Image (cartoon, rainbow, N blue to C red):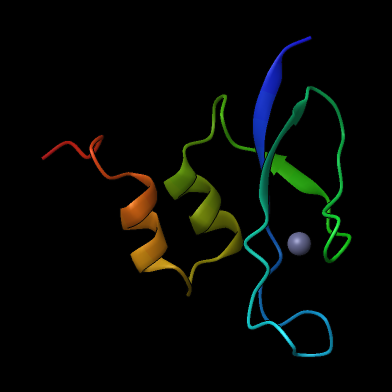
Length: 77
Ligand SMILES: [Zn+2]
């Protein structure tokens, strides 16, 4: 079965504000999955959506530095 990268799209603090954001990412078999940390439905990001699109959808205000880390080496300029 194909596997894809899934990413949590939760915005804002979770876990009674113990974490400022979730940022959970994991590779799963194709299907419907939920975040084990916060319970939010995970968005498949490795096919179709790019990381930057996911960030725009779910985390517009966060993780600019993380995005740079994730796309290191693949940035076109
Ligand atoms: Zn989550």
